[in-house]
Image (cartoon, rainbow, N blue to C red; front, side, top):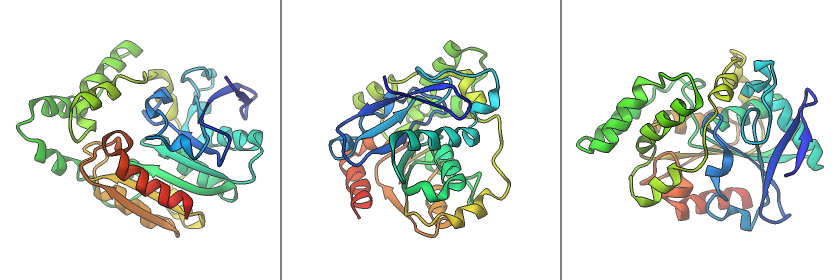
Length: 278
């Protein structure tokens, strides 16, 4: 497995998916979920080489004693080190869910290193004034007992102290992340474990209070992909996030929840391919 040196000298690892053309750095969410759940983003690796970091405390990358090094704000330094190690003048960053926090932190701190950015179903209420409409979207699923149980567990939160309990809670809440809970979705939900310690470290440092204003300095094109039925992030704040970037656009994937490349792969690819090839 390829590796590089992080900002504090730690040896960090990454996967390479696909050929050697048009590399993209692909950031997993979770937070702190093993990136295997991303797969190849519905075949995106056929046209782009996907460089998929194992973030600190996840997979092959170690968690250092200093918890703050694992925060998404601090790990932006690691992504910049990875860009340099890859020999790229500027980099395309694609990120999912909580991984978009790291992508945005990177874009804010290393603006000139960013060529393009794709944010897939990002949490956005920490940046925009638009309230989440996840509860409203969830009302459309009333009567779906599996969904209702998962959404209630999600609202209650993970009252656990170890990885086994944390992963069990993630599986309990998984149906809330998809617009449908069929065989395809159930199979996907089983891929990629979470690290509780890495999750805590990921959120151990708050971003600057003026982060939303700093996004105005990001001139690179930004695509925000929202799931029309995403009961994790909601829809309205995700769409609103695109407006914070000077060259930001939002695309809504219909009949999709939090994982559009799994739920609606054709629509997902049409949107991301058009953006990356523009």
